[in-house]
Image (cartoon, rainbow, N blue to C red; front, top):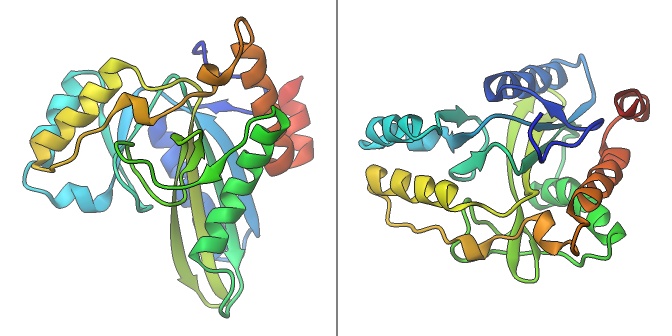
Length: 242
């Protein structure tokens, strides 16, 4: 177990397995075998890129260099941009069926995803909001930000089905701020792909950065427990806490 992984609600699993789990649960919802699913998870160091980046001329070179540096690249079905995984990152995946009609829309799905994250932060006395942060990786207007820095990034995918849509939404949350190796790997990947973008460590904030002396591990445990109580089936969460 990594030093930032919490016992109980967070499932540690290989990234490929996590992506397969998301795809399988989305299929279950689309085909009517389930109404919703949720998972808190973490994985080994890796970079995850949307499929659209896979078509860039420099993608193979960028992927090879990242893998050699210890950051293998995986493609995902949801949108967004390049994101890092590994120690210091905890992910929340929520999947559900949206009924036909005008609601919910993309914004509603993002708020459904971020509301429990922001509530768990509020339990710790941490104010948060939504907003874009220049210099942050996978920047977007539905980042969860704290004091103007990015704490969580979000992405989603909608799959049309006969009775509405199957929705997959994902948030990656920083338990620790990005280290220099992570930032250097992201920036090299962009350079190798010919993308004019630069990621800055100062644009991000990890939960441990917000804790008082000696309180980081306890704060992380409280945050993840509060989040799990809001998003995971109660019986499953209790079973994992034991």
